[in-house]
Structure formats: C-alpha cells, structure tokens
Image (cartoon, rainbow, N blue to C red; front, side):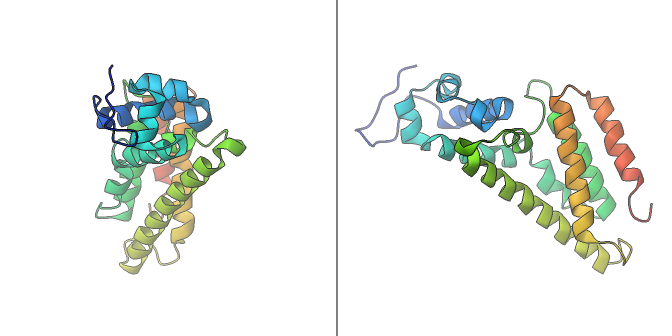
Length: 202
C-alpha cells in the first residue's frame, strides 16, 4: 500500500490509522509485547516503519495506544460490569465477560493485558509496568464498587472489598491464561460459575 508523507514530520496519509491500530492491537494480543517484532507489526498494519513512527511513535508508544484500544473494545466488559446494580451482578458480569472476551471466535485467545506481560525481559519493562498499572487500576475500581456495596448493605459488613476485588481479578486473569492454553468457553464458564458459588452471603 502506498504511503504519502506530508513533509518529513507530517502525518502519514494513504492508510487508515484506526484500522492499522486495530491490527497492531491484535498482534500484541497474540504475540505479547516482546514477541511482536517491528516487522510483524508493520506488516500487519500495512505500513512502513517510518509511517508507523510518524503516526504512532515507537513500539512502546504503539503498545500503549493498542492497550487503550483494547480496554475500550474487547475488554470494555470490565468497566460495564461496574455499573451492574448489585455486587454479585458485578462479579457475574466481570467473570462471564472474561470468558466471552478470551474465547471470542476470530480473535486471539486469552487477554492482551495478561499475555503481553507474562514474559517481559528488560526491553519490555515499561510495557509490563503499564500493564501492571492498568490491572491495578481496575482492581481499585472494583474494590471501590464493593466498598459501596458494603456501605449500602448489599454485601455483608465483614466483607473485605480489597480482598474480594483481588480474588475476582485473579480468577478473571486465570481464565485468560487458561483460554490461551486451549481451554474451551464451556470449560471456562464452569470455572466462573464455580467461583461465583462462594460469593459472600450466597
């Protein structure tokens, strides 16, 4: 695909930046941060390295943009789950969403937020730190939602919101790892249902 530059520092033209970012996201999702080479990325995106740098920055910048796209797309179920009316429904939506997202036909299995950081040597430390911050932020939002549930009497008063949030995130991340290892949607749905049976007050 021909790429036309508007001067040496101009924004590249001749390609769809949104589509290119979508393709980059899938490469990172499937191969992880370190496993995704610049050749893999630019080939999938259909652009040159020069165009990639001009439009998205370096590999780390591109990864952060891809993670943002992932959070707003395939992983958006996590934010939506927080809006459920009860804490149990929040947990159900989160775990069921994790099962659906990590086993979606036509997409890489597993979770970009988990897979991309499993094998991060020194070149991938910044990407790993970005992923840790992303996961910790969601755990904190889940904790705050469960604290509200305790305050409103939706969860028993002796519930530890921090512990409950970390438990759910651990199960959701485990589902992602199992999906990447070949577990089926039905198998993972059973895992999610089993975890929900131990819900406080159930």
